[in-house]
Image 1 (tube, one colour):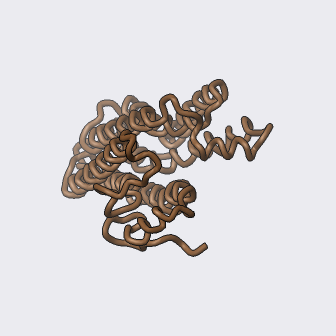
Image 2 (tube, rainbow, N blue to C red; image 1 turned 45 degrees about the vertical axis):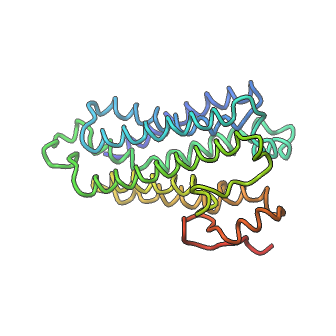
Length: 272
C-alpha cells in the first residue's frame, strides 16, 4: 500500500526540516533551507530504498536521478551562498516578521517547504511503494524498464543538462569583475531569462514520466505541475525579476527574450 510510505516520508521530512530549522536559528540564516532542498530528497529516497531494498529497475533509476540532481543542486547553492549574508528574500521576510520571525519561519519557511517536498516527492514514493518486497510480484514487470522509463530518463537528463549549463554560465559570468552589475544575456540566457528554472521543471517531468508506469503512477503528475507553477508563477521567476523591473537594461533584455521556455513564450514584462 502507498499510504504507509507516504506516512514514513512525511515523518522523515518533518524531522529533517526540524534539524535544519534549528541550525538556521543558531546561525541566523533561514536561507539555508535552500541548501537543504536537494539533500532532503536524497535522504528521503535513501530511506525508501533501505525499506524496499534492493532497489531495482524503476526504483534504481529514481535513486540515481534524485542523487544526481540533489547533489548538483546542493553543491551549486552552497558555493553560491558561501560567505554571503542571508538571501535577500529571507532577509526581507525576517524584517517583515520582526520579533515573531523565528516562529513564523518554522511553519512558513521550513514546514511549508517540507510539505511541498512531500508533494513533489510523490512520484518517488509511488515508485518505491510499488517496488516493496511485500508486493511479492517482482516478475509482473512493475519494476522493469521500458519505453516509458527510457523516455523519462531522456527528459530528465535533458533538463539536468540545461540547468547545469545555465548555472555554470551564470556563475562564470558573475565571477568576472567586468560583469559586475550587469545582466547575463549570453549562452542559454539569450533564449530564456530563466533557463536554469526551465531545466529544473523539465527534469521533474522526466522523473514523473519514469515512475508513471507503476500503480497509481499517473497521480504523480502533481509533482511536476507544482514545480512548474512555483518556479514560473510563485517563488521563482516573479520574486527574482522583481529586483530588476525598473532597470532599463533588464527591460530591454526582457523585451526580446522569452521569460521561461527557450525560443517560445511571452516576451517583455507584465504591465504594472
